[in-house]
Length: 296
Image (cartoon, rainbow, N blue to C red; front, side):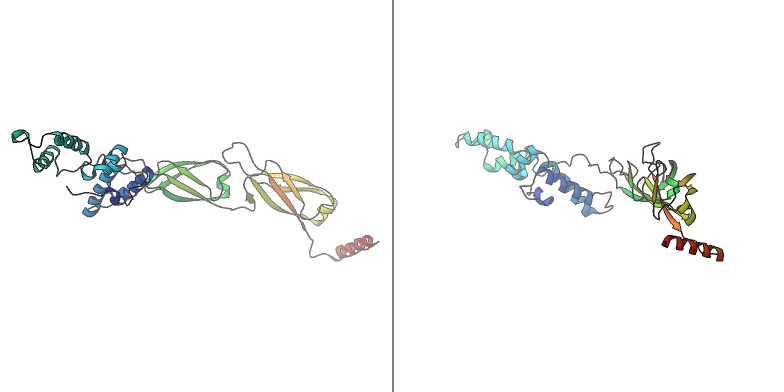
C-alpha cells in the first residue's frame, strides 16, 4: 500500500495543532461535500481523502501511530511485536515453523489486508447557510408592538416586532436559515430593520425631538399653546419673555423603550419664534412706539 500523506491532504505541516486540523478539515469537507458538488467524481474522491485524513489526525492515538509507523499505522504495534519475536528466534530455525523475510511480509499482507483502506467514519454534519434579510417599516409602525408574517426563501415566518425597534437594528431568528446538510442544524435568519421616519419628529434612541413655532406676542406676553405629541395632544404654558430656541422637556412622551413595556423616553420641544409679516399700518405704528420706548 502506497504511503498517503494525510498532512498534505489537509494542507498542513506535521507540527499542526488539533485546532488547525479541525479547521482545515471542516473547510475542505464543506468544499468537496457531494451535496455541494453533485456528479463531480473528483470532488467525491477528495471528500473521501479528507475524511480519511481527519479520521487519523484528529485522534491523538491514531495520529501518534501514524507519525511512527506511516502507512502501516493501524497494525504498527503488531508488526513491531512480531518483529521482536521473530528476531529472537534462532537463525537456524527452518521448516514449517520458520519463515523468511519474504514470508514475513506475505504473512502480514494476508493477516491485515495490505491492499485494504481505512473507513471514513460517519458522514459529517454541517449547519445550513445563514440568511440575511431587511424589513422596511415606518416609524409609526414600531411605536407599538405588532405581528407580521414574513416570507423568506418560500417559508412563512410569524414574527412579533416589539415596540421601540431602532433603524439598522438586527435580530437573529434561530433555525430559519438554510437547511442543514446530513442532518445538521438549520442556519439562522438575521433580520435587519430599515425604518423610515414618516413624521415631523426626530428620533434619537428613546427620545423624540420636535420644533414648535410660537408667535411673537405669546413669547413676549406668555400664554398657552397646543402641541402634538407622537400619539396625542398636550397643552403647554409659555412663560412671558420666552426666548427663541428655548426647550421644554415632556417626560414620558417620547418613544417606547425596546423590550421594556410601559417605559418611554422624553419629548423635547424647541420653541421657534415666528416673526409676524404683512403688518398693517396700525401694527407698524405700534411697533415704532415700542421701539421708541425701548430706546429711552
